[in-house]
Image 1 (tube, rainbow, N blue to C red):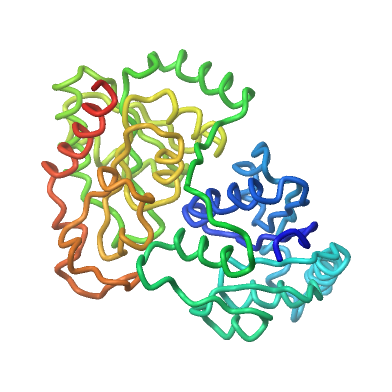
Image 2 (image 1 turned 90 degrees about the horizontal axis):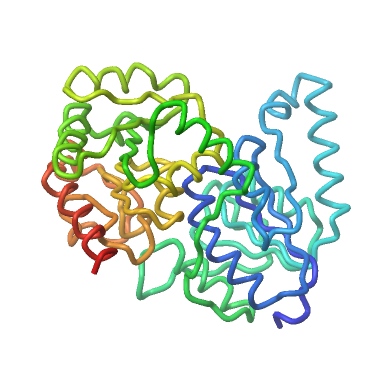
Length: 349
């Protein structure tokens, strides 16, 4: 069946971490269908991460903010109608909805494609817009294994997750200039990612400070922190608990530059948020601290040393749990330190 697909649309507009999770599956899709045209539907703010990835032919930008008020704004309605025309005129012979929400299901339906494939567990009624629904695998809760099963069921053989995110040369040169300005030497600094869109996913500032000082004392690494411009306060809070200076890079890195920075760092400590998954995809020693989100479902794929979480054996298949026993406050500094040491020791072995 796979050899009949020549023009494919992948719908995965957000969020940043979810987009990174999907990359190995789309890389595998390209490996199996080298001559197919692959278009990725993505929100504009995440497009820079995908712009220079070789196995994607085109990006279809979803301008969510411009379309949001379509029911009362003529300009927003025109934007939505133009987007619908783009979907229809794409003449896709295969649409893969990896988002699984009402909006993404509608987008799949708007293409008019006769092969619209999505996850059986899609929410908000999205599944009713698919021509084929794929059940979750019975042997693994991880979302990437779900994507691989989806590909298998439409005749595209799943391939191992051999994928590493490589930033473009332009981003590498830009970040090297910024590193020079702040006195950061390659592989001689650790990057902290201390923020998240959700408070429950934020490891306490005191613990970020404690792990930073442990790494500083053990390896004499410099300390840097990244985030949006709005994250300066949380970085300042960590600094108040940390004797060593932290270079605040919040609001100063694009997504490609972030990947380039991680690639040049010695290690990354992150909350469960998009930049942490970029770091893991760059192959740098990374620990992502998890609270109630299930890392067996959404953590770095087959990389247990990248996961710091309590009670892993009790997580089951749920995406997120309300059980307070899984709260991020229960993750100790010692666990994160041991995870980083394990990765560093493996690299030098």
